[in-house]
Image (tube, rainbow, N blue to C red; front, side, top):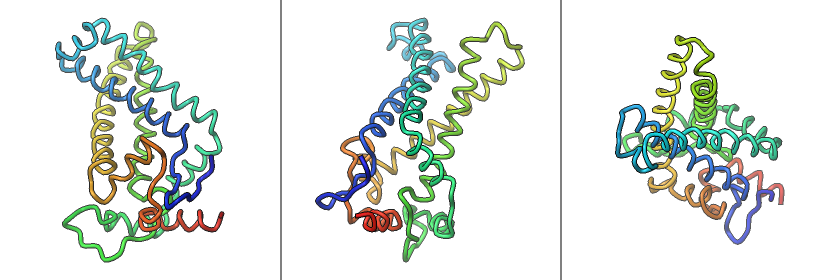
Length: 221
């Protein structure tokens, strides 16, 4: 379904995108929970999944879902994904100006006017890049730890463990910050319903927060 404006609402995320987001998020939560249980040897977490052996199995197969879900989405929606990559890797003067003001989300930074943004603001662009890089690092270190642990050198395996763990910690912090802004912060919490529920966002809010993208939608009508 293409982007459109209907009854004062703007379609920002279609069904496939929202489904992929749900699957990837749930897999990430399970991976993070079980991974924390392994690293700090928290028996209570392992017991949630029926003991350490089951928790390990759940962690590994959640990793498969974490990998396969986005891969299928990209293959089925390659043009859309390419546009997303083009968007999040392209920074204009307005994006850099947005970063200077942090979009008006930080209380102690006074902002008279927020620079116009595309479908994703400058902060979301940076988050998107970091999430993609983090996911790749987690995947590229996770599978050798599982499938080739008896083949690769101990030094390489130790490197994989360290990169895997610290990347996961950074990702957990990023996702926590993303959740706060998308679901709790009064200026941006409408984003949660858009991505996780019906895909639509109020047109008036879009015209203010994503002025460049909203203008493109109006031209396309």
